[in-house]
Image 1 (cartoon, rainbow over the protein chains, first blue to last red):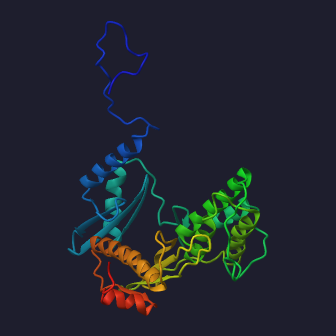
Image 2 (cartoon, helix red, strand yellow):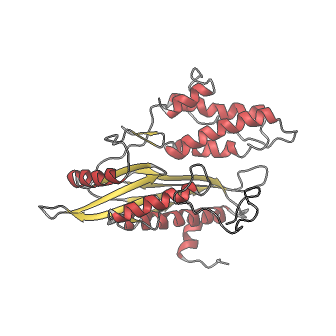
Image 3 (cartoon, rainbow over the protein chains, first blue to last red):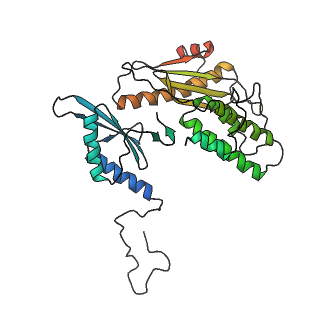
Length: 119
Length: 205
């Protein structure tokens, strides 16, 4: 990384550049930066990205009282996230945790995804 | 609004005559030899692009027709455009069609694969088609022109089998990662020659 042409001030150190803490919107690096950020947050919530498809995360857990095994599957498309799983209550709990991390809207049961209508 | 209705309206096809097939019977498109017309080209490519998106989402039934017509995107003729629009007429007749997934405790995954031989008159390449069913509902479908010229029907079918088997490998690994317990996946094929080759690859090079 170096200073762009025309920004270099005479007498100042040429090697000094700003270190960006956040990805800038619209840059070609922004998409990857967003995905890495989302990936990290999902890992913290206990979701694992599967190898076969980088847009799918799974979470294996157990319900608090009955100790039933629960499997949650997350489908990610850029910033559209679809939650599905074998236990409604557990799913709701995880969704709440996710919504604390990211500012988002819960659209309820999926009616449309990627232009595909779901009935 | 449904995506299909949107594109029907966009290309002014909402009042077209419904047809029963995506393309007319025995239609065999020929590549254009004339100069390309940039205006026609743009229109043709946007028609194909809209149809491709629809096909990839929920319409395996138009896969062959769309892929066939998309092969003329670089230099389309009026005739090509009319036939690409013919697909809209078919879609209009079947606009309520979708894919139904039924709730089921058992799980069965199967694949059907087929190929034609030297169907393309312009370069004599064959065409592969396959679909993977998840409890009888299609989840993955393909129709594409093969990259290599097959010198026999069995060879074309064998190449199609190879592509389908690769897709099955991926589906299997995906389902395993999602902790599904799946029985062996069966791949169906109607060409005896290629089945024999799979079981006993004596002519394998």
